[in-house]
Image (cartoon, rainbow, N blue to C red):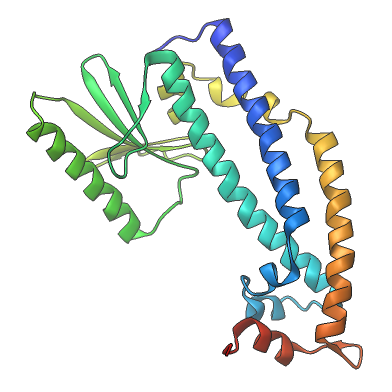
Length: 247
Protein backbone atom coordinates (compact mmCIF):
# COMPACT_ATOMS: atom_id res chain seq x y z
CA UNK A 1 0.00 0.00 0.00
CA UNK A 2 1.30 3.49 -0.84
CA UNK A 3 1.66 6.18 1.80
CA UNK A 4 0.76 9.76 0.94
CA UNK A 5 3.01 12.67 1.87
CA UNK A 6 1.71 16.18 2.57
CA UNK A 7 3.19 17.30 -0.76
CA UNK A 8 1.21 14.61 -2.59
CA UNK A 9 -1.98 15.60 -0.77
CA UNK A 10 -1.41 19.13 -2.07
CA UNK A 11 -1.01 17.80 -5.61
CA UNK A 12 -4.29 15.93 -5.32
CA UNK A 13 -6.07 18.96 -3.89
CA UNK A 14 -4.80 21.12 -6.74
CA UNK A 15 -5.90 18.50 -9.28
CA UNK A 16 -9.42 18.51 -7.82
CA UNK A 17 -9.70 22.31 -7.68
CA UNK A 18 -8.46 22.71 -11.24
CA UNK A 19 -10.80 19.96 -12.43
CA UNK A 20 -13.80 21.41 -10.61
CA UNK A 21 -13.24 24.84 -12.17
CA UNK A 22 -13.06 23.19 -15.60
CA UNK A 23 -16.29 21.30 -14.87
CA UNK A 24 -18.10 24.51 -13.93
CA UNK A 25 -16.82 26.27 -17.04
CA UNK A 26 -17.80 23.36 -19.28
CA UNK A 27 -21.26 23.21 -17.72
CA UNK A 28 -21.82 26.94 -18.29
CA UNK A 29 -20.52 26.75 -21.85
CA UNK A 30 -22.89 23.87 -22.67
CA UNK A 31 -25.82 25.77 -21.16
CA UNK A 32 -25.13 28.89 -23.22
CA UNK A 33 -24.90 26.84 -26.42
CA UNK A 34 -28.06 24.86 -25.64
CA UNK A 35 -31.03 25.07 -27.98
CA UNK A 36 -34.60 24.13 -27.12
CA UNK A 37 -34.66 21.38 -29.75
CA UNK A 38 -31.55 19.85 -28.13
CA UNK A 39 -33.54 18.95 -25.05
CA UNK A 40 -36.98 18.53 -26.64
CA UNK A 41 -35.87 15.73 -28.94
CA UNK A 42 -33.61 13.89 -26.51
CA UNK A 43 -35.94 13.51 -23.56
CA UNK A 44 -38.97 11.24 -23.09
CA UNK A 45 -41.97 13.54 -23.46
CA UNK A 46 -44.33 10.72 -22.45
CA UNK A 47 -42.61 10.69 -19.05
CA UNK A 48 -43.08 14.41 -18.58
CA UNK A 49 -46.79 14.05 -19.31
CA UNK A 50 -47.09 11.91 -16.16
CA UNK A 51 -45.69 14.73 -14.00
CA UNK A 52 -48.79 16.93 -14.21
CA UNK A 53 -46.85 19.96 -15.41
CA UNK A 54 -49.41 22.60 -16.29
CA UNK A 55 -47.48 25.67 -17.43
CA UNK A 56 -44.83 26.13 -20.13
CA UNK A 57 -42.30 27.30 -17.55
CA UNK A 58 -42.88 24.25 -15.32
CA UNK A 59 -42.42 21.88 -18.23
CA UNK A 60 -39.42 23.62 -19.78
CA UNK A 61 -37.68 23.91 -16.40
CA UNK A 62 -38.27 20.23 -15.69
CA UNK A 63 -36.87 19.21 -19.09
CA UNK A 64 -33.83 21.49 -18.69
CA UNK A 65 -33.13 20.16 -15.18
CA UNK A 66 -33.29 16.54 -16.37
CA UNK A 67 -31.04 17.21 -19.37
CA UNK A 68 -28.43 19.12 -17.39
CA UNK A 69 -28.44 16.62 -14.50
CA UNK A 70 -27.83 13.70 -16.87
CA UNK A 71 -25.00 15.50 -18.66
CA UNK A 72 -23.47 16.63 -15.37
CA UNK A 73 -23.37 13.10 -13.90
CA UNK A 74 -21.54 11.77 -16.95
CA UNK A 75 -19.01 14.60 -16.99
CA UNK A 76 -18.34 14.41 -13.26
CA UNK A 77 -18.00 10.62 -13.41
CA UNK A 78 -15.34 10.95 -16.11
CA UNK A 79 -13.47 13.51 -13.97
CA UNK A 80 -13.43 11.21 -10.94
CA UNK A 81 -12.11 8.35 -13.06
CA UNK A 82 -9.28 10.57 -14.32
CA UNK A 83 -8.56 11.60 -10.73
CA UNK A 84 -8.24 7.97 -9.65
CA UNK A 85 -5.77 7.30 -12.46
CA UNK A 86 -3.79 10.43 -11.56
CA UNK A 87 -3.51 9.32 -7.92
CA UNK A 88 -2.07 5.99 -8.98
CA UNK A 89 0.38 7.62 -11.39
CA UNK A 90 1.69 9.92 -8.65
CA UNK A 91 1.90 7.37 -5.82
CA UNK A 92 3.23 4.24 -7.50
CA UNK A 93 3.65 4.70 -11.23
CA UNK A 94 0.27 3.31 -12.17
CA UNK A 95 -0.74 3.97 -15.73
CA UNK A 96 -3.77 4.24 -17.93
CA UNK A 97 -4.14 0.87 -19.60
CA UNK A 98 -4.03 0.27 -23.33
CA UNK A 99 -5.92 -3.01 -22.84
CA UNK A 100 -9.53 -2.97 -24.00
CA UNK A 101 -11.97 -2.62 -21.10
CA UNK A 102 -9.21 -1.84 -18.57
CA UNK A 103 -8.75 1.74 -17.32
CA UNK A 104 -5.80 1.45 -14.96
CA UNK A 105 -2.86 -0.89 -14.34
CA UNK A 106 -0.90 -0.98 -11.09
CA UNK A 107 2.07 -3.20 -10.30
CA UNK A 108 2.23 -3.73 -6.55
CA UNK A 109 4.23 -6.34 -4.63
CA UNK A 110 4.54 -8.65 -7.62
CA UNK A 111 0.85 -8.43 -8.49
CA UNK A 112 -0.51 -6.63 -11.55
CA UNK A 113 -3.83 -5.04 -10.68
CA UNK A 114 -6.06 -4.44 -13.70
CA UNK A 115 -8.84 -2.02 -12.85
CA UNK A 116 -12.07 -1.10 -14.60
CA UNK A 117 -13.21 2.21 -13.06
CA UNK A 118 -16.88 3.15 -12.83
CA UNK A 119 -18.56 6.15 -11.27
CA UNK A 120 -20.84 4.24 -8.87
CA UNK A 121 -21.78 0.68 -7.90
CA UNK A 122 -25.00 0.39 -9.94
CA UNK A 123 -23.44 1.07 -13.29
CA UNK A 124 -24.57 -1.80 -15.47
CA UNK A 125 -26.97 -4.63 -16.21
CA UNK A 126 -26.09 -8.32 -16.29
CA UNK A 127 -24.90 -8.16 -19.91
CA UNK A 128 -22.59 -5.23 -19.20
CA UNK A 129 -21.14 -6.94 -16.14
CA UNK A 130 -20.61 -10.12 -18.19
CA UNK A 131 -18.78 -8.00 -20.77
CA UNK A 132 -16.48 -6.61 -18.09
CA UNK A 133 -15.72 -10.13 -16.85
CA UNK A 134 -14.98 -11.18 -20.42
CA UNK A 135 -12.56 -8.25 -20.78
CA UNK A 136 -10.80 -9.38 -17.60
CA UNK A 137 -10.48 -12.94 -18.93
CA UNK A 138 -9.11 -11.72 -22.27
CA UNK A 139 -6.60 -9.49 -20.47
CA UNK A 140 -5.41 -12.47 -18.41
CA UNK A 141 -5.02 -14.58 -21.54
CA UNK A 142 -3.05 -11.81 -23.27
CA UNK A 143 -0.66 -11.53 -20.32
CA UNK A 144 -0.08 -15.30 -20.32
CA UNK A 145 0.68 -15.46 -24.04
CA UNK A 146 2.96 -12.40 -23.96
CA UNK A 147 5.44 -14.24 -21.79
CA UNK A 148 6.12 -14.52 -18.11
CA UNK A 149 4.07 -15.91 -15.26
CA UNK A 150 2.06 -12.83 -14.30
CA UNK A 151 0.08 -12.82 -11.08
CA UNK A 152 -2.97 -10.69 -11.93
CA UNK A 153 -5.84 -9.36 -9.86
CA UNK A 154 -8.93 -7.82 -11.43
CA UNK A 155 -10.82 -4.98 -9.81
CA UNK A 156 -14.01 -3.08 -10.55
CA UNK A 157 -13.35 0.22 -8.78
CA UNK A 158 -16.33 2.48 -8.04
CA UNK A 159 -15.71 6.11 -7.08
CA UNK A 160 -18.71 6.29 -4.75
CA UNK A 161 -21.17 3.98 -3.01
CA UNK A 162 -20.63 0.79 -1.07
CA UNK A 163 -20.63 -2.96 -1.50
CA UNK A 164 -19.81 -5.01 1.57
CA UNK A 165 -19.30 -8.19 -0.45
CA UNK A 166 -16.31 -7.22 -2.61
CA UNK A 167 -15.42 -10.73 -3.78
CA UNK A 168 -17.21 -11.27 -7.11
CA UNK A 169 -15.75 -14.44 -8.52
CA UNK A 170 -12.86 -13.54 -10.81
CA UNK A 171 -12.73 -9.91 -9.65
CA UNK A 172 -13.09 -7.68 -6.61
CA UNK A 173 -15.61 -4.84 -6.51
CA UNK A 174 -14.21 -1.99 -4.42
CA UNK A 175 -16.61 0.89 -3.85
CA UNK A 176 -16.28 4.27 -2.18
CA UNK A 177 -14.03 4.14 0.85
CA UNK A 178 -12.58 0.74 -0.11
CA UNK A 179 -11.57 1.95 -3.58
CA UNK A 180 -9.91 5.18 -2.45
CA UNK A 181 -8.10 3.34 0.35
CA UNK A 182 -6.86 0.76 -2.14
CA UNK A 183 -5.41 3.55 -4.29
CA UNK A 184 -3.93 5.65 -1.49
CA UNK A 185 -3.45 3.48 1.60
CA UNK A 186 -5.46 6.09 3.53
CA UNK A 187 -8.79 4.84 4.92
CA UNK A 188 -10.02 8.44 5.32
CA UNK A 189 -9.05 9.67 1.86
CA UNK A 190 -12.64 9.45 0.62
CA UNK A 191 -13.54 12.08 3.25
CA UNK A 192 -10.55 14.32 2.58
CA UNK A 193 -11.58 15.02 -1.02
CA UNK A 194 -14.89 16.60 0.04
CA UNK A 195 -13.53 20.06 0.84
CA UNK A 196 -11.63 20.76 -2.41
CA UNK A 197 -14.64 19.55 -4.43
CA UNK A 198 -16.51 22.59 -3.11
CA UNK A 199 -13.89 25.00 -4.48
CA UNK A 200 -15.62 28.17 -5.79
CA UNK A 201 -18.96 26.34 -5.68
CA UNK A 202 -20.98 29.34 -4.50
CA UNK A 203 -19.62 31.82 -7.03
CA UNK A 204 -19.76 29.40 -9.94
CA UNK A 205 -23.28 28.20 -9.09
CA UNK A 206 -24.60 31.76 -8.85
CA UNK A 207 -23.19 32.55 -12.28
CA UNK A 208 -24.69 29.37 -13.72
CA UNK A 209 -28.10 30.08 -12.18
CA UNK A 210 -28.16 33.54 -13.78
CA UNK A 211 -27.55 32.02 -17.21
CA UNK A 212 -30.04 29.24 -16.51
CA UNK A 213 -32.77 31.80 -15.75
CA UNK A 214 -32.02 33.70 -18.95
CA UNK A 215 -32.16 30.51 -20.98
CA UNK A 216 -35.37 29.40 -19.24
CA UNK A 217 -37.10 32.67 -20.13
CA UNK A 218 -35.97 32.37 -23.76
CA UNK A 219 -37.00 28.72 -24.08
CA UNK A 220 -40.36 29.32 -22.41
CA UNK A 221 -41.13 32.07 -24.91
CA UNK A 222 -40.30 29.80 -27.86
CA UNK A 223 -42.24 26.91 -26.32
CA UNK A 224 -45.29 29.16 -25.84
CA UNK A 225 -45.32 30.07 -29.53
CA UNK A 226 -44.89 26.50 -30.76
CA UNK A 227 -46.81 24.32 -28.32
CA UNK A 228 -49.48 26.39 -26.59
CA UNK A 229 -53.02 26.46 -27.96
CA UNK A 230 -55.86 28.19 -26.13
CA UNK A 231 -53.57 28.80 -23.14
CA UNK A 232 -52.95 25.06 -22.72
CA UNK A 233 -50.02 22.79 -23.62
CA UNK A 234 -50.79 20.97 -26.85
CA UNK A 235 -49.36 17.60 -25.92
CA UNK A 236 -50.21 16.01 -29.27
CA UNK A 237 -48.17 18.63 -31.09
CA UNK A 238 -45.37 18.25 -28.54
CA UNK A 239 -45.23 14.45 -28.84
CA UNK A 240 -45.36 14.71 -32.64
CA UNK A 241 -42.36 17.06 -32.60
CA UNK A 242 -40.52 14.71 -30.23
CA UNK A 243 -41.41 11.29 -31.66
CA UNK A 244 -43.17 11.75 -35.00
CA UNK A 245 -41.66 10.67 -38.31
CA UNK A 246 -39.47 13.37 -39.83
CA UNK A 247 -39.41 13.59 -43.61
